[in-house]
Length: 353
Image 1 (cartoon, rainbow, N blue to C red):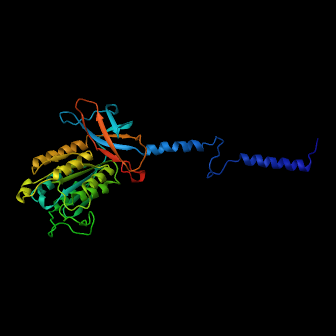
Image 2 (image 1 turned 90 degrees about the vertical axis):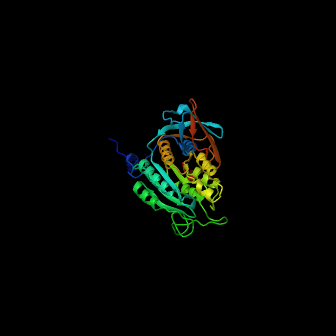
Image 3 (image 1 turned 135 degrees about the vertical axis):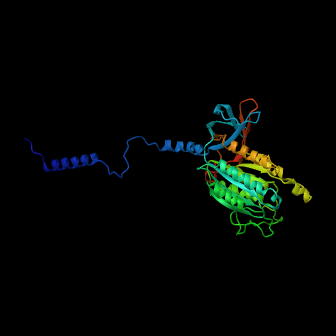
């Protein structure tokens, strides 16, 4: 029997310990060890694809047939989206009748609305009772020489009705809400032209309020469309609504007798039409007729519950804040699409998609 030398024995022990250590399971907190090839380059290559997917553009729109009826049975293959005249590949296309809805009601309480305000309050409250569901929310803003938040986000038609009933005409002669400057806190400072009806400021601020909200968003304006003294221009109000992906519906409620009595011209319709059409909504002229107003609210309710949602990743991947023109068309005899005219390609942190 051969005897091992002490040095050979020591080397054997050391080799055994090294082998045993290599076979021990790692610590539960330690990262797993892998013999797979390095995939760092593969991960880096996939990054741009992830960024492109993050730049998803979502469009809500409605479609009517040539008789004016709403069409609710279209599929992705029926519709085409052009961005700056370039065709886009639609990734998802769904009819949306039950997604949460966020509404802003903007109530004109300037002097010209004195004879029609009670009608607006009654009909508007009835509309909110019908349309709001448990997962929907709405807020109420009045505007005149001030812009005031009468009721913040709520799902309660009762709270909205209470706030609407409290709205009152304010011509700057002592009536109306008071407070510190800003929406919901009293008058908005105005420079230059005299204050009258801060319509554009109200639309701008309400749109900005909706920026952080997701899903379907709409502003409903009850006004004659006249603006006097706003800090923001009409184009700025439209731009802010587009950036927040908000649809504007405008109920043109003009007591023309008021203007004739004061020998004033009336010019509000064109501004309301622009705000509505540029954002995918409509202007509906109801005059001072209660029946027409009820019908208009019903039309808005039907449209908001019969929308399509189409999404795509734009072929122009630059998120440079530029405005992109949109054109949506759907196959069918005389089908007419109602959608926003474009969007701003905002960086991800500023998007309101």
